[in-house]
Image 1 (tube, rainbow, N blue to C red):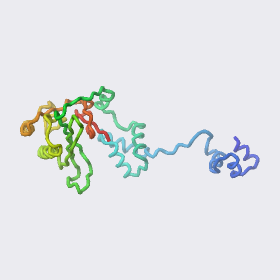
Image 2: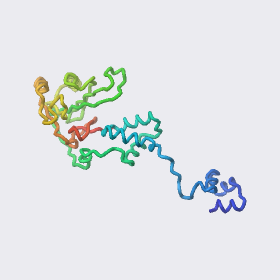
Image 3: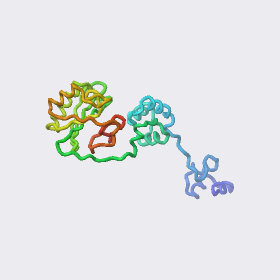
Image 4: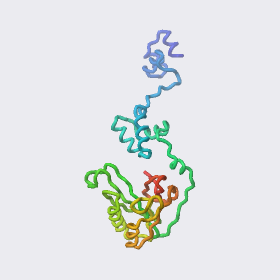
Length: 246
């Protein structure tokens, strides 16, 4: 109102701006009707042009990591930050509904105590696009072994997750830890057990007999029954005892 009144009295835009303590561009926008008092202009959402792409990618691969999807749209021209990107994923509800994930939310959690030397937990972590210097091919497979009592862990890179590479990596992890515990725990990986029943395969039973250990298989869909560990990976859908934490 003051700007329009002063303008009608013949004041210049610069004089009005100095009198009201505002920028000249702001005064000009008010006088031209381009801005309305107490209403801020909303900058266009940089995520919108990539919304359909993200929906399609997550429809094709439901549990695709947000960091991987962020890297993809950055290559396509997205200029926002990662935190802005993840907020947009939640705001637009881009990730499809997953019933096993949804069922695990809000479920009671318990810290399971383990005596020293009782158990080692093993799990694979896939590392896409590893450096060529690693010499493991297009995808690196990291076998992590963590002591359930202390959370101390060691890991070994492998070219594959098949049975020979699993046994080789297991032995290397045990040597890095300085020995073995009485029990090894796995999720339902096919190289260790039959996923449908959880029964240990004869081949892996021979490995366990050689090292003199017991094999424990995680029950299905028990992702919240975890031991507190430093490095965690997995998804509540696969019965893993671990969860990703950065």
